[in-house]
Image (cartoon, rainbow, N blue to C red; front, side, top):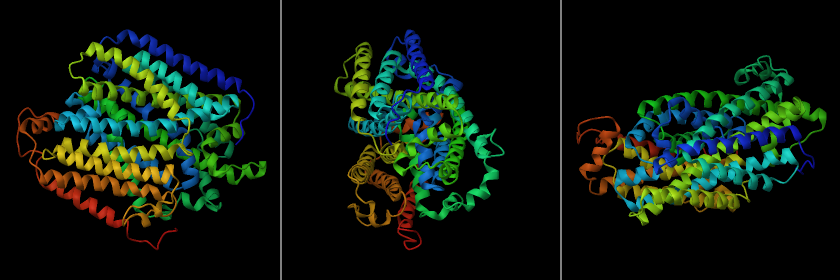
Length: 558
């Protein structure tokens, strides 16, 4: 699509307002930052409501607003699996990690892994994984900001990437975690309004009877959708191999636990109870918005096969990321388009801010702090301001060549995070016998295979079935076939971690005591969380998942 060559004034005004308010919030929040703990975890003083809303803004990034809609248009029913798995992942985060991580009182995911397994090497490895995952996540969201600027000013996406990156860098550097938290709360409120209302207007224009409640508003349109050429895939789950859905679940469930910018929010709350309730609020709002996004994808396919044909509008698959704005432009009016654009700006800023925060914390607290352990907190705080600014600039430069589709980079980030960080976190909380040798082996295995697959499939554009992944590559066929790599890397990481842990000496008692403390026990019992049932069950399930991929080969389209 060529730039529009015109300035959308109303959208520009609302977007600039969002940008200015975000910067002003960070300037105001800076008064609370007096220590390193204030800068990175907001003094562990954030309540459940504030933290829950901030978590929502991390979850509902431009990936949701723009990228998931595009994915639903292209992949139909699989889109349900994406948002369902992502919503369920927060329940997994609540049950498996949230309160236990808060009791551990670390600053970051990387610090948790290092302290739980008493290993500086694992801390450094975790920082490397964190940087890769964060850059992938950032690239997708900065591209989304570029798309927004395309609609605002009629300029190429690159300008939006540069401006968006610089603004976020400014307010993250200024306000630290206090600024990020209050900004994310503000941006969540903006996003909820700017998504729900424009989508309701679009559904009303298409004839949806329940348009006032977008998540369920399109029910009367289902018969018409079934008659359309592409409608079949919306209501038939077996359009792809079932292991695709398992892969999406594994990537979301363990990926969200491994994504450092999500986990970091639990280190900012007052206690484990606040961690739980912030997650409950987040799950509710994320589910509400994800079902609304699916309604948007439904409306987009319906529009492309009906009114778009009448108007002579064609949209190629590589431009599906623009579909939200196209819908509102043709079915609503400029006011609602401006509102949607402002919401997109808020969505992009909030996620990028969280990612920059964790990258800065990882480099200064977890990497520099290991290399120079004698450096005091005051010096680290000063370095944090510099590091945050430099990281923001570098990431913006790296993002100038963004992925073709926003969601693709994000899903790779989830897969890599799940295999390399989610697995050691979950086992570190629930199985005392996990050793640093096992974690190192599992982390290296999961990360190397996942990152190599990303380079070959997404960067070098190789056909997934031709990549040199022995035994499994031929089964990565069909729409989004590369997603099935997650059904290999996460189970394999579990298997390697558990087997190597069994073959190496058990951790010291002091490390095993951390598990009891995270679960709230005041005493230590070496038998607690140390049985063989859990690891054996995980290994068996992991093997079965990988073998399942090799079945039903002739049942689904290649």
